[in-house]
Image (cartoon, rainbow, N blue to C red; front, side, top):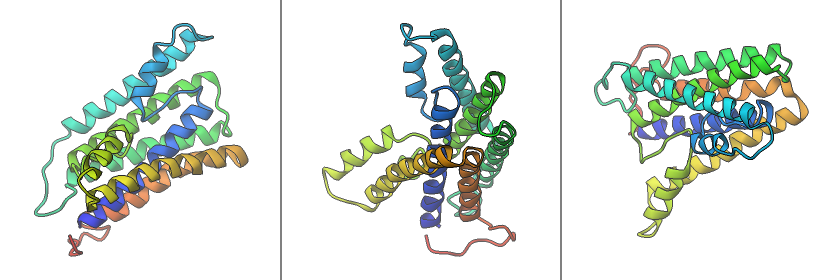
Amino acid sequence: MRRRGHAALVLLTLAAGAMDAIAFLGLGGVFTANMTGNLILFALAGREDWVLHALRSGLACAGFCAGLLIGFTMPGRHEGNALWSLAVIRLLWADLALQSAFLAGWALGGGAPGPAVILVLIGVGSCAMGMQAAAARRVDLAGITATFVTGTLTSLFESSASGWSTDNRRRAAIVVALVLGALCASLLLRFAPPWAGVVAPAFTLLALAVAHPYGFRGRPDRGSR
């Protein structure tokens, strides 16, 4: 079960990388998962069109915080020895629903949404990533966040000073996954823009298929831990 849990976190990180790539390249240079970057962008008062950029960055932060609030207040507990509680699974289904709404808006705009739609997509995408971050924190596996990797990267180098452990390999996989997710989405943005929005929900759906403690048929997972 622990291996499945880590695999699901890797898939969620791929989704986060894809969402951030789309947001930065297609939604006016903001992030949906990296709030550190958004806070800095919000404060760059000397840049051209600062008010517009501040609005977008502020909206992304607000959406992310809303997702966190939903994620951390959702009731539920772990079922038996399952690493992923049913509450977390429900939270990820809600995350997937928001990502699907993002995909619909992106596709309807042909991969080039207008100014008003951009604001809606920033709010929806950031809320989805906030919920995803809350889900990963509730799982609490090796300090992995599945939306941003600064803390994961710090933990990786901190732990590697005393040896290369299984947790270090997991953290390294998360860092690589964020880059690969962004690469997948950015390539689609370059060659097939309307399809770029498919990447994140596809990875999230795969993560749910892997992580669900009872699978999709209602039977307990009796795999290795």
